[in-house]
Image (tube, rainbow, N blue to C red):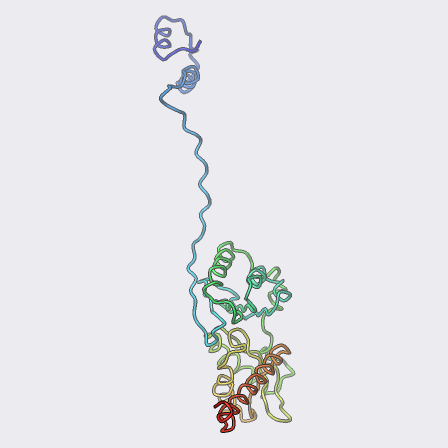
Amino acid sequence: MSLSARNIKACLRRGNVRVPQHRSISMLRRSFATAMPSSPGLSSRPASKPAPPLTRSMFIQTESTPNDDSLKFIPGVPVMGEGTAEFLDTRAALVSPLAIRLMGIQGIKAVFYGPDFVTVSKDSEHPWAVLKPEIYSFLMEHFSSGQGLFRSEEERESAGPQDTRILDTDSETVAMIKELLETRVRPAIMEDGGDIEYRGFDEDGTGMVKVKLKGSCRGCDSSTVTLKSGIERMLMHYIPQVKGVEQVLDQEEQISLDEFNKLERKINKETRQESSPMAQYMSA
């Protein structure tokens, strides 16, 4: 039979309960606590669970670009740090855990890493209002976890641009072109969420510099203005050997451009037919 606290005190006064002298007060209290039943009105408190680990909160900004189908996301932490990387399909994105997740979103067709931003490009059929919440979620989860941007350091180095690195075999003119592209052109284009890649210079022939636009500048309507009014004018001003700048297109971009030109010619032809006097007479 368990003893109540009053009975225990009475037994102690009568000497019926002997407590060894070497026991400490804390041990005695533990013995009494074990002997005393819990009060019906009081329930023992459950052991408190450990607090969940604190998660780092992030504020991701977005900036519009000249390309309506490209958006610049700024997570507030370094992305590439130095250099850039672009992923145009799922196969290319396999080297980056973040890129492969972003490319898995329906409607996303390209991912571009800058020093401190990520540019995401989509097709024209999916609105940003639908895509942005999932993009925000992937970016916040990745940069809060501290996970690496690439699966290995070798894949990171190979993904960055090597086009403007001045080689021992470069002529003085080519070295000057690369220097201007790296120090003057590339920073300005990155402000719009894009990049430029040097593809060659016809030094003994036409004097044309070949470049490729990347990121938000890829497929942008104002890319021609950027090439002619910006890059071409500056290179021709500082380097007399340069006679012009032309953009190099990938096979898919060339096919898209050809299809667009065909559609434009078809629309113009139909417009001229409708505006001719014979067409107006027949429609009447």
